[in-house]
Length: 69
Image (cartoon, rainbow, N blue to C red; front, side, top):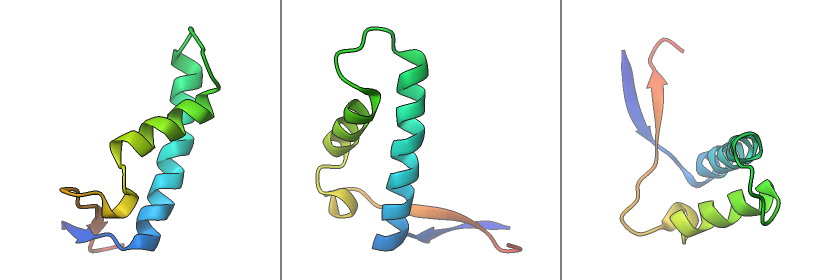
């Protein structure tokens, strides 16, 4: 069975680092009109989406947990 478990600040930071890395890869592979490096664009966009990071108003963050793992 799977369930949701609320993230803590450390889990969120790990998630965000991974998300940023994957976003950079996606932007680099699929963007052809480059105005700035993919890493810079990814960081800016994530900061725009989550203006206060883990404490962004009206946002909650969860992990999907498999009870057998």
